[in-house]
Image 1 (cartoon, rainbow, N blue to C red):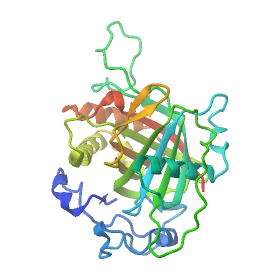
Image 2: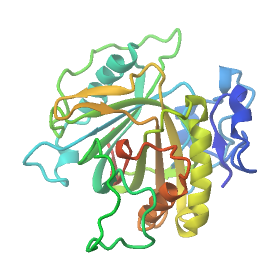
Image 3: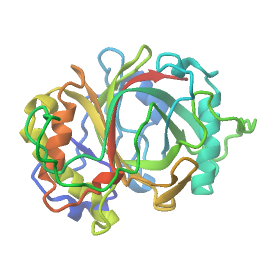
Image 4: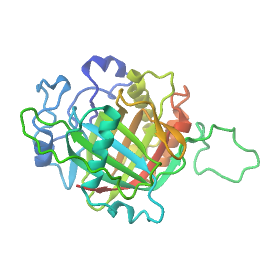
Length: 331
């Protein structure tokens, strides 16, 4: 699959890391009717409309493009489920309109801007996860019964996450009258108050397609906090380098991908967020999500390889974590 870089043209000189990692080539044969209706005819930097977002043609099966419109904003909400709820019960604990309405309020609180219409909402039920991690892990499964303890690492900022919401908002169309009904004030009922991590981000990299997860499908999401020595303009470039090496080290993971994306935290969103349970949470800078064809069995190996290749300590590991989840469409 060709890769699609969504960063502005002015920043292209940052991403000449490896041949083939960048470029603005079209990565899909077409988006079909869903993409044409949802995304419009064009989606380019500056809105010039000279480069089509997708060529015409059908998407096979029940799939949608990973790429979103350039002017859309994503809200990721990660939290523990309420006490007493099982993971199976949690995604069905709300009426469908509550989740995007609640995160519209979150969007406004994080960005001081009124969101547009929500065009996609998914709920992710976490099936496995890892927080922090050793930068130089032993190959293969780690033996927990060892006589010599490993070097002490800083305590991780996070310790548990059960649910992740993912809501996409597109701006209102100029000159079109919008029905305004206000936003629901209550939290989704599966959220344990005080545990939330809420992130407003924009897609900066996209490739391939993702399933329409009506009945649940696998998704892996890596929340990465970058070291203070990595400038915001270089964060995607650093990820590209680490990702390319990790895919080479674990070819079964890269070969099994249907699509993936990278989101970057909006600059107006503060890097730390108040949290009742732990005081404050350091927000990630990049969020990489992967939709595999054949399950997530190789994803932990990919994550270990990514950490092992980080010899420059570009990742702030105690503030980084990944979630492996089943994804359910919610709108």
